[in-house]
Amino acid sequence: MSVRFAMILAAAVLASGAHAQSAFQKPEDAVKYRQAAFTVLGAHFSRIGAMAQGRVPFDAKAAQDNAAIVVAMSTLPWAGFTPDTQNLKSRTKPEAWMEMDKVRAGADKMVKAVADLQAATRTGNLDAVKKSFGDAAATCKACHDAYRE
Image 1 (cartoon, rainbow, N blue to C red):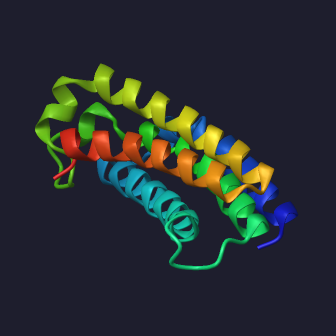
Image 2 (image 1 turned 120 degrees about the horizontal axis):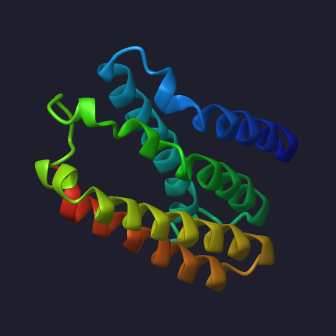
């Protein structure tokens, strides 16, 4: 994926995310939206993780391209956590709905951590990427452990 395409994709995704919550026709659409955003984010995050963990060779450009998508996607899922989705089948634990302020705080930490990861990919330094990837992964794990079945 070219950097230009990734930037266009990121801009389109960010522009659509700001109005996503008001655009959901049905609560089920909000769940599908947040799950899709997490799926795309996770796919690109995993590509960086494979490099950080030595399962594939480090490619600084690929890491940068994937990090750009991760950053763009990181702000999107939260619009899909609408109150009317609370009782729908998903992997969200009931505790999330009772502690949505903590969920949002965790989301903010994750958004910052993936921005730091993106900055690390720009250095081309694998050790910096490994550290930032670990920090970002820890924010994901904390939320998954607390709020995901």
